[in-house]
Image 1 (cartoon, rainbow over the protein chains, first blue to last red):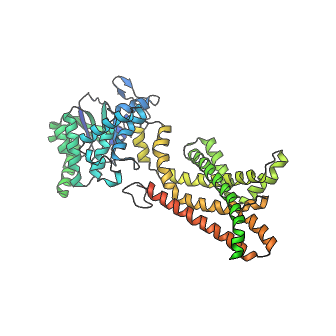
Image 2 (tube, chains in turn cyan, orange):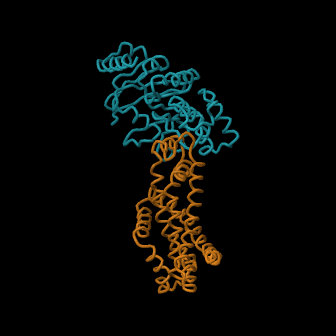
Image 3 (cartoon, rainbow over the protein chains, first blue to last red):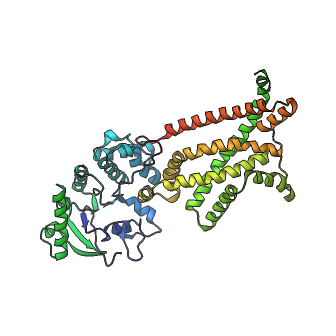
Length: 229
Length: 221
């Protein structure tokens, strides 16, 4: 699926990966925290290779935000956020609670802390998903199309949260088709197709891409956006 | 009516034996069922084979034969069990086999998405089973599980075939003594019916109490 992909993400940096579906963007993210085991290739976090043997440790340092939120259905918003620190890091209940409230506050959902996922809108669920990833206080978070399962009017609230996180200096690798968002927050945009990187560079470069294929793709998503609006 | 009242204490006393058999086999069956289901879903090939073999044998053969194997068959291997323990063991193994399948179904309805989310937080398999899978499976399993509760209560009457004086045994002895078969067995049947209604209501109550807010009855996620 993925071939010859190599890039580096610095601390505090935001990179956005774009590309048509089936191009391997999600697979790439999943290979980083080994939700999918790559056949070959290596991933390093702060100089330490992430392997199957140390994946439980590595995953604590890598947050993951899913396209379909993947919240735990039987837990409240707050419980969803603190189950990670409590179970994996052994954080005491009272301290975990504080951490949880801090991050729910950050995503603007402190008033929903006792609500269950089924009682929340998609946008709210995704914000809980983001708070859940943050509560582990990871070194970076990976976001797999965080807004593509949302109704258009709910996308904004999630993007606002992500912009604020970028401002705070959180390291993020985002798969997204929200070009405006990418232009605004990313230091670098990576365009992938068929498991390979076609073009990568600063956001300005994508206003006038070098490659024909990139141009085609960008005008496609622009058309789609206009159709929706 | 007077006749019914006169035999009621004896029947109710015997029904307590039924309830004991029921309580033992349902609760021990829960433990067997959970272990069996975890083995089926998460076990390696050998564990899976053991669990599926157990569950299919006890679901695929009549309870009466299982009971006879344990009570009449085991003595030839030098294992002599009194009638009550033999009946309790047969009922437990039988119920555990069914509960294995109920729990397996419930575990498999917990979506892989939630498991992946737990993995992404760094949880290991045991933590995921405990914190995510079991706690949701228990809620889902209650509905099929109430059938099992009712079923085992009624199947417990088979224990009379190996000499346990539970309610059917008692009813039989009373009717031999008084020759009034119809009112005797009818009374026994009504006692059963009353118990089944109580159990069903309690489990319905438990189901609605445990239901995850925001989800409708029967909805999983």
